[in-house]
Amino acid sequence: MIRRFCTYFDHNYLPHGMVMLESLYAHYPEAQAYVLCLSDECHDALSSLAYPFVSTISLSTLETVDPELAAARSTRSLIEYYFTITPCLPWYLLTGHGLSEITYLDADMMFFDSPEPLFSEAGEASVIITPHRFSSHLSEKRKWGLYNVSWLTFRNTPSGLKCLSWYRKACLEWCFDRLEETRFADQKYLDVFPTKFEGVHVMENLGGGVAPWNVEDMDIRATDVSISIAGAPLIFYHAHGVRHYWGPFYSSGLYAYKASLTNPATVLILKHYIIQYTQAAKTARQLLEGVDFSGIRYIKKQAGLRNGAKFLIEVFSNSLIYHYSQ
Image 1 (cartoon, rainbow, N blue to C red):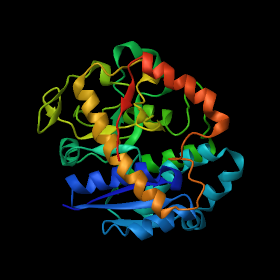
Image 2: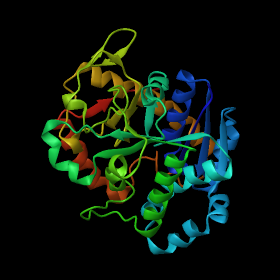
Image 3: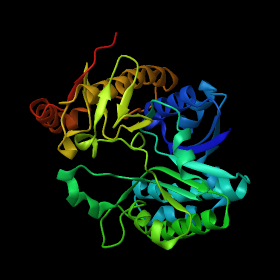
Image 4: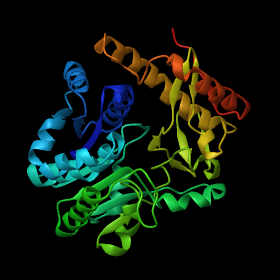
């Protein structure tokens, strides 16, 4: 069965996006993906890659058909504007392309197995959202939102469109990078989905939504051929915070969530991601030669001391990944 997905990123995030797209297709060849390119450089690079399962959309195209979104750009920072896009892209695809279903995916994810079980468990639900499942020592982070934006499915049903329309209007009105009682960026709006709208399914499969904020409490195990979460196959890992320091050193993203690399299975997940990311970064550098590519560049001199301090903290907190690639 063909499933349609969408995401967005600019050229700085291209390696992350490549890992997500390639791993999705590897485990789900029926996937068709729409990528909103947030920069011309990203659009050119993706066009050069010529993924047969990917359709590209320029930001100017979306802004032309959604003038309310375009008008919001001058009222918020760049990252806040990107947050605002989250519901606008699936709305454009459902209403403008006549799709029966669309699933938004964050670009910094990697698939390890087919996502079909996540759809199967939802049955006829019109909306699928992903719980954070914060580790027990992170309960205070629930104030930032019970659910994560990494996976959002909306179906072209009255219930699905009603929920997505409300979400889009809410983000157009207010989508800022600060916490208020009932709002935070594009994320905290999801808290009310299950009670405000019909047909909302909260993802139950523990193989979906594994991330730095929940690995400490997860029963993650690995064999030579598979990685499992409480006995179920790992479906996708949200590699939030993974980045290259320099040479063979990478941040795992775990330190920010008071987690460490004590479980060999967690190390294996991250090494799988970093291996694919490193290869994608090499390809991206070739495609973007001469472009200011801050996403995968060596650390800028003015940020050297700050990143050096973070590097040492990760060394002593056992959250640094070592991967050497020729």
